[in-house]
Amino acid sequence: MADSIELKNDDQRVGYRPEQATHGGHPLFRWPPHATTISKWLFGFPGFLWPWGVFFIGLALLSWHFLMPDLNTMKHLSIRWIGLLFVQNLVLLVLFAGAWHLRLYVRKAQGTQFKYNSRWLSVDNPTFLFGNQLWDNVFWNVCSAVPIWTAYEVVTFWLQANGYVAIVSWQDHPIYCVLLVVLMPFWNDVHFYIIHRLIHWPPLYRSVHYLHHKNVNVGPWSGVAMHPIEHLLFFSAVILFWLIPSHPVHIVRLLQALALGPSLSHLGFGRVALGRSRFLSTEDYMHFLHHKYVTVNYGANVVPLDRWFGTYHDGTDEAQAAMNKRARGKAL
Image (cartoon, rainbow, N blue to C red):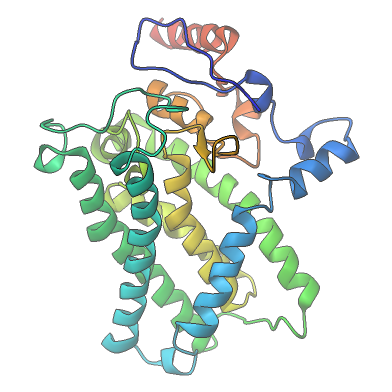
């Protein structure tokens, strides 16, 4: 279990970073492959499947079978079932992001232990709506993220219900359906990297993505605190299922992971205490560095696109020097 390391840095707000060995990249993409390391990554805790891979597929199954209207109902657009989806999505996001915020930022259950930035969220700060970082973030979650998430869900279900896109059955095609679940995080990473690089293009950054980057010191509600145009791009990963056969559970799983997953990568803590001596790694350090430095770590946690495209930063002095060298090159 990694111990905290105090950064020798002029920015005294920075307090914790994990051991660098924990950020060597996922073993699936290392050569030569090592079966034991890959198995540990797939089935370890935390790992590719546990706990969040299983959590999101389980949540999608429960949502589809017990909370959502069937496809026959969704053949015709209706305020009733659309409103039901909106309320369900709103409740899920409030419960998920709100639970993390309550534990880590209201109750402060572990103080600043494992917190990347020792300061708490901003108040009396005119950078944010209402002068308050939390309420700014909540506003963009509720008034933009949830409506656009729901809109993509509604359109995709309506297309399936009316036969415009193909539906597959888990009973008839179990291997295909399972493979689709397994491969979705890889698709999400590639899609996210592409749209993230796009909105870092200066005109889009200044008009759209700047809103998300107001959150330098991130919290659970910062995850999908975005401009509506960014939400349109971010949730557009579901368009994959307009092109290939899928089951409604795949749609629910992808959109729920997109909406809820960013709370995990924006907790602001490297580890969450589960007891006196047990901790859950959040693996969000790379994205914390993206919010700190802006020009590094555009990708997520599965496909090492930042390593391949030279935008990786793991917090080491070597990575810092490489980032500074790139910046000087652009300035010339």
